[in-house]
Length: 199
View (cartoon, helix red, strand yellow):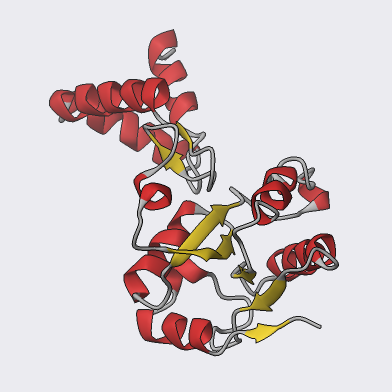
């Protein structure tokens, strides 16, 4: 029996989500169509709204509805500190740990040549420009302790060396291979407090 084209399209569209294979996408589609029309409509409208209104902050590159996000506009943050993280989830984890009061730059990824992700894809040109704004004094590298995260931190430290900035890396209170969004707040706070300068 052939399924309707629109159903095939919905199943295929759901497969773009990370970790969602053909069977999971099929179950989701059937659930939304059979049991949760209101949820499906809310999902469709929220997604359409987000696509039309959410952009990248001009300063930190995080998601926002404004040109400059609320965090970057805050007068309570230490404008001389810039923390570089891979993803918005990492920024949220840093904020939940209450261990850092500076500014951020979100790369939206990490260097991964095998996946075709180079310096341009993670906006390193914008990061260098931001770090040289005359206000930033220290750049805290808080990329994940994965092979790609370490390579990204090393690449950034090389880019920013000789720019008159203090470059630090969060301490290895985090497990090797661990990712910030999956670490408890106490471990993350300890890692930030024990950050060290990269020589």
